Image 1 (tube, rainbow, N blue to C red):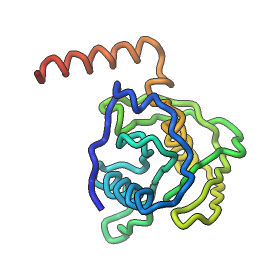
Image 2 (tube, rainbow, N blue to C red):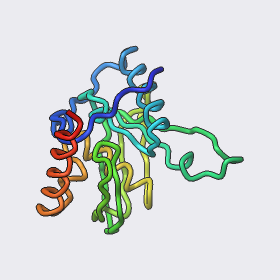
Image 3 (cartoon, one colour):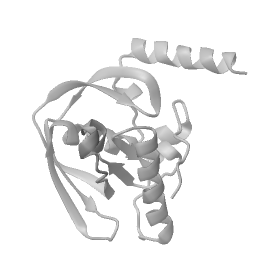
Length: 174
């Protein structure tokens, strides 16, 4: 297991669609383990493979660890491969951030309730019926697999301001 570098906007891998996983190889298992380590180290509550430069449909998440009291800290990550949202209902407008779009938070409209289907790391079907933060995290990470980032949910003005800030900081670090 290893902590990988999280790619940040405007890296082109963030706007590329991820391919379905067709073989649960040792490489995919290693990728999932690396993603879990990277998510916890960041720290984050979810991560898509695109965010570490791998264009395959793998996401990991654990919303409980980040918010648990120190005495209750227990890592219980979920790995979901080839996730598909089968049902989305309701609407909820809340603030989101993203490890691949640092220092940028915006309010995003998401479905309040989703059902997501995929497979786990052993190849068994996995169905998740989620609402609240879990539903939001699943939608956010699946967006990444479809080549969408938080910037795609931002207004043109907010996106432009962020992009100028990134270009300015890149010039300053050279």
